[in-house]
Length: 144
Image (tube, rainbow, N blue to C red; front, top):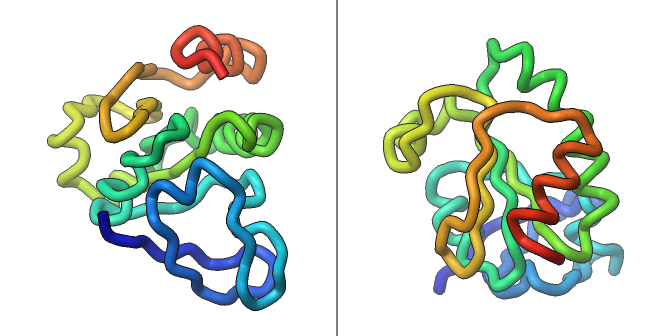
């Protein structure tokens, strides 16, 4: 299993993590604060392949630059990611920059949310939801 790079949200230092480290809360070696502070990680195609191998459920939000529902859904995802950081890891993928993933995961529109656990897709959602509905969908799809 190869590592992926994460930028510390506190000090900006880059850190290499293994996918299985997503199941805990690793600290930055520079500032000693949590590297994964509940904010979704931005990923490209190569990083996503490694990230979804985590034993902790990984919620992947596929979005697009010109997608108004995606922009409306973004703060909801941020809030839910912060509230549920102990149960799920959240990843964002911009399909405008990672078109190969749309084909790989058969994504026809955005936003699309996929949940993975240990590299296997567990659930899919093909629309934005209100916060309470999104939380309910997460809990129904993969109980924490």
